[in-house]
Amino acid sequence: MGTVSFNVMLESLGLYTIAGLMIVVGLAIFEVTTPYSNWREIQKGNIAVALATGGKIVGLANIFRVVESHNDAAFDVIAGGGFGFLLLLATYWLFEFLTPTLKVNDEIQKGNIAVGLLAFLLSLGVSLVVGAALVR
Image (tube, rainbow, N blue to C red; front, side, top):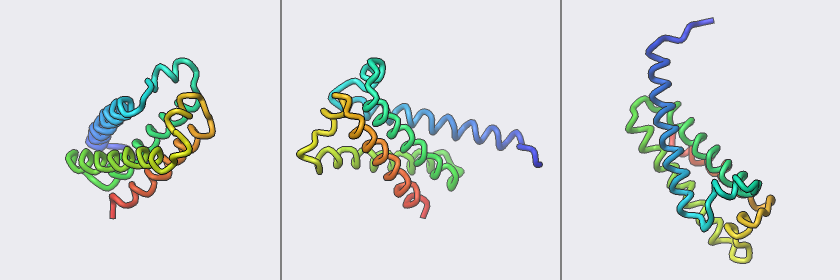
């Protein structure tokens, strides 16, 4: 079994830091785009909000995973991941817009686990497609 060099560990730490910070920024932006406080709802035990928020975290992490595995430059990781985040955000807005009989944010805030799970899976699915598209 090979050993991991110090340079590889240092580079990994840098990419981890970039992705972590971008995920925190992404979650802050998602926080202001929902009519409720994600973290307050999660603290109250709202599983639907936890699922929807978890989907956003997994979706963002997956996008950065793919971008980082194909780019060495920090700028490329930030640019590609940022663009992927914008696509993920647009998808969430489209989900709300394209389901006029289902008020997604209202249902998630009310604790509708089915809608929260659907939001989770939508974020994950979109991140798989966006990640693949970003490394072509």
